[in-house]
Every structure is written in C-alpha cells, then in structure tokens.
Image 1 (cartoon, helix red, strand yellow):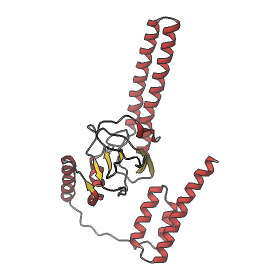
Image 2 (tube, helix red, strand yellow; image 1 turned 60 degrees about the horizontal axis):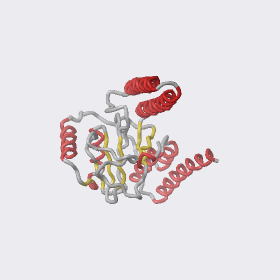
Image 3 (cartoon, one colour; image 1 turned 180 degrees about the horizontal axis):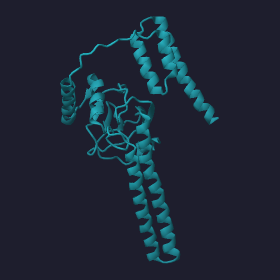
Image 4 (spheres, one colour; image 1 turned 90 degrees about the vertical axis):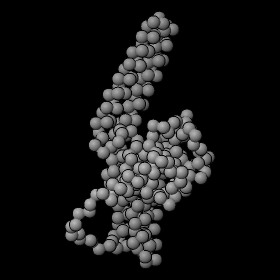
Length: 269
C-alpha cells in the first residue's frame, strides 16, 4: 500500500470502534489475524491515516506491518481493488463525456457521463459483494480491519473493526494504555467477564519439553513472515537464558532480516 494516504484529507473516527492509545512507539501486537482471529500466515501493510482532531507528528511512522491470514488478505485486496476499478471507469466516463459534449452535443455528453457513473457504481457493488463472499463468519468487514492514526508525539493510536481484537490489543498493552474511553473500558470489562465465564475443561494435557536453542533457530529461519520471525525470537529469548545461545538466536534473526533486504535490493538492481 502507498503511504500517500497519510497526507489525505483527515477523516472522522465516529464510524470506527474505540480508539486505542498507547503511550509509546513500541507496543505489543497479538499474534493473530486482526480480522478473523485465525493464526496469521501473512502480513498486511497498514498506512497511517490522518483523523480529525488527532495530531500526527512529523516523525511518525508512515506505515506498519500487521500479521494477517491469507484468506483475509485476499478479501481486503478484492474489496479495495473494486474501488480502484470503479474510479478508473468513472474518470474515463467523465473525460469521454466532456469530449462528446464539446464535439457532438451537450445532452449526449451528459448521458454518457451518467451511464459511466451507473456502470462504475454497479461494478463497485458487485465486486465488493464478491469480496464479502470471501470472508469467514468471524470477519467483521471485507475491508481492512486495522486503522493506524500514527504517532502524535505522545501516543500511538489505533482502531480495529473487531471488538475482540480491540480488547486483546488493549490488554496486551495495559501498562501503556492512555486516554481509554468509556466504550473501550466497557469492552475490556466485557472481554474479561466473558473469559472468566467460559469454563476450562478438566482434561489431561501432555506438555512437550521446551524447545532447545537449535530448534528455536530452525523455527526462526523457517518463519514465513518478518512478524512471525520476530514473534518467535521474542518467545525464544524469554525461554533461553544461556548467553551463547541467546547470541546465536539474535544472529540467526539478523541473518534472516538481512537476507530479505538483500533480496529486495537484487530485485531493484
């Protein structure tokens, strides 16, 4: 996605869910798809969006990567692609209609513009319906489930379409949470109560032995996305205490990160 959206006209946040403000540039991201809640196997780049009444610092990040599952990534791309195609048809219809109005007759030009608008709207609705058909029952919307408002100079702000993901994101960043609205506070309380109300089945569980440093390195090297790799590195560093093994984990993650950068540079050259 392009970062130009960060310079777009500010939008209202009234239609979005509760705003989650984190008093830091660093924050925890639940390792699950923010749309359907499934295990993520891909990533989606979220550009910063200006919002009315919310400051955006000049040094704010212009985009962030969020873990996403491929199924939700497919319906997001389909949904947003529908708007691009319809905009192209509208523009072409306007230009052609103006040309016809100038060269042939004004009424003919107006008819052509109206017809183009009708086709564009019909195509938009049809393609968005196709995008919605790709959603799972857990998806709150066919569009992007994350809105990033950037760094204001004192806090990073987000909004999520899924109430469950909103609560989990806020819970994972409880110590840095600021300016929590009543809506967010109610959502967090409801999420806590619902979690307590679900009984944990009494069953025998076989707990596997903890991974060794070598097993963590193999997992890091095989991670399919950068977010998954960093998630595994974080978990590995919490489990491995040996200084030598921790250094090897960091080197493995660094090699993987640099390999991805080299691949991008080779494609550009």
